Length: 417
Image 1 (tube, helix red, strand yellow):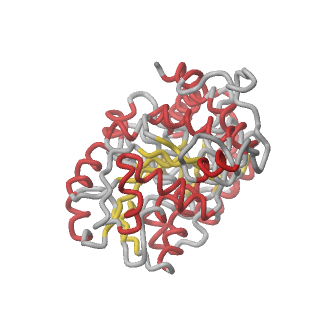
Image 2 (tube, one colour):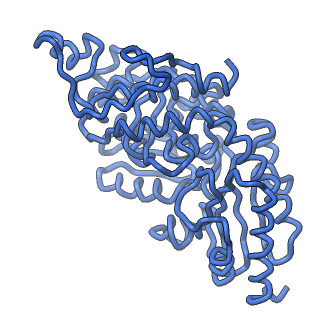
Image 3 (cartoon, rainbow, N blue to C red):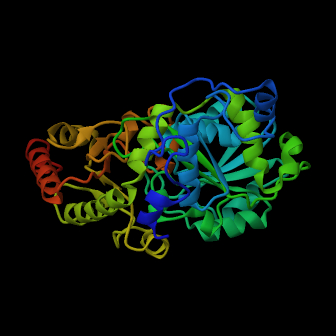
């Protein structure tokens, strides 16, 4: 299937019980069974079925199947947020004394999470790029995973997934990739070698900022061993399903980070238009970036498919014509950045990405508020930087809005250029 067809028909048919063309909201915390024998088998994974929504739910399961198909994975587990997805993915394989290597250009919330993992005895090392030169000195017997974002948020650096995967696998490690900013519309990380894919489905997958959720997709390709991953010992017998079997029956179930059926329904509803929306997000973002590059009063415009981006070559090779829906601009001072945000008419000042509407945020004072100056610099976060999640409005209105805001800022707060 091609992408837009897969959104509607991939790993999905009408509801088995009702014939509904979209899986209904099974808003129930528990599900009765006809016998004690049947529920015993369900609890012990010896029979298909549902017992308790913290463990599994029909609406959530339908969403998981569709994402699995789109990402080209073996299985998926949907959870209550994107941060819950990252947390569960790592806790599923790690124990005290283990170490992670991560690109430094990751979401501020993920950096905060990795600091919390230090309290559990799990250490994170940061690198600018996933190349052998930077990875080799950090890898030891305690290193258990390498992590990156497909498109860094908000640095907008592009991970060369295939190259990184080849190097990481050469060290015998799994590659965990956060694909939130790209989505499977732009790139399928598993096809390029990533082992575990994470999506904050609150963003582009949902599309309307009406639900918080995350989803973990297992490729089934990494060969887990009990020697290297003792916490996986009981699940190695499941072969390709080892990671998902432990996640489903242990980590996810015990943490209790389950996705509500209603939010799964909203996600599925949004998912069906993902291709159409991403086409507009990407074209609007490129158009806006190209126009802003020509205007006075802007120190820097950053977008992966701008020729001026140091990641243009990687982005073009890996993404083709779609560079994502996010760009950043620098306006010389924090004062100018705040004034610009406050002057916009259509763009909403909000800490989210992937909405149908254009969204702006000042990352340094919000999503990176708990990061050190060094962490901010490595993540590409500066006091004058604004992150723009470009929506699907008519591009003419977006351009007019940004022009008038910039004209106001230039007149009231000159840069002295």
